[in-house]
Image 1: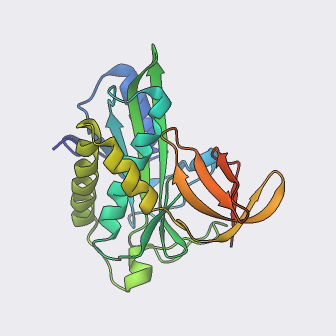
Image 2 (image 1 turned 180 degrees about the vertical axis):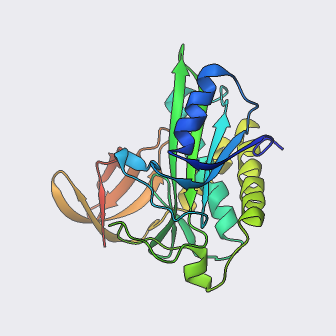
Length: 246
């Protein structure tokens, strides 16, 4: 087992990603080391957003990886792999799990988990990776202005054992990560694409030119989202260039 081979627990942290990044400055922990906590005062989300989590209710972890086998131009494979691992965990409890590009984890139309990946690239090689994961387990009240948070407890009406959930999550992510490092990239990309939220479903989107109707048809190895318009034109989008319209 790689993921979870070494565990570092802190009762309270500003951010598990920050702790893991600082750790890497001073030492090189075993690959798969997980930093986890009950509460983050400054939990990080995408694009500088904060990740809300009630104390002791959810899984808040950061995984340290050394995916040197992955070319920096294709580092999105790390995101695909982790997203699929989290989806495998969610599917233990709910079959309706999808990945909202690039790496938000959805159940139906609600967000249950998010990922923040911070790679260190040295000499055109990924030297290390810190992958932060926030996964809503037992929280039922969300106070931030996030539009659509959900948790396992909110969906199923029962309280879950966080220790068991952690074991299951690490097993599922470890399985996918082993696929990645064994060279099964085509399998990972194919499964990621088929797991995308709104895959091949017509819906509303907005880019710099305005609102349009389109459908997701693929994702490039670099992580660009490919969206087809009604008249057949296909456009590639980088992260934050496209907004999903309800």
